[in-house]
Structure formats: structure tokens, C-alpha cells
Image (cartoon, rainbow, N blue to C red; front, side, top):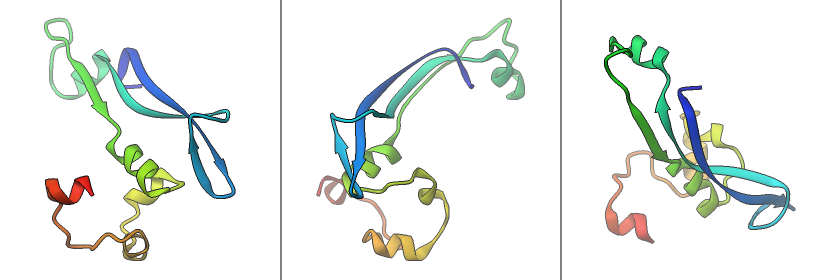
Length: 103
């Protein structure tokens, strides 16, 4: 709803016995989105859409983490539940590093 026209990259996936399977099934997960910013979004930011345009793009890093860790629901990332963090092995005060992110 924030970009028009839009484009995205999806990967095929399915959930089988609680496990995410990539490249099979009838489900799809968006991992990259892009597009021209909708004029109303620019207006809401105090920018004149008759004078300016914007291009938005981004990789769904949270969705990539879902794939890596087998997390079934995107909403859990935003619940601020320490039990969830501990379950997946994330410390509440961990500071991400390049080395840690590659492991």
C-alpha cells in the first residue's frame, strides 16, 4: 500500500510437520520489495508529490531470519517477549556483530 507500482521477490515454501520447506509447496514468502512511493506517503511526510518522487526498496531481513531459525510467525519478532528471545537463543541485550551474524 506504500508503493505504486511495486515489485517484489518471493520464494516458494511450505510448512510440513512444523518445518519450513523452501522451494516446494504452495506457499510464498516475500523477501524483497520495491516500488515508487505512493503520493499520499510523500504528502504525509510533508513532501510535495507534484515536485518530488521517491523510490523505496528493502530486503525483509526478518523474513530471512524466519527461514534461518525456522520461525513460523513474523508477528513474534515484534511482541517484545523475552521467552521468545530465549527460545531462539537471542540474548535480550546482545549486540549484533558481523561475525555473529554469519554464524
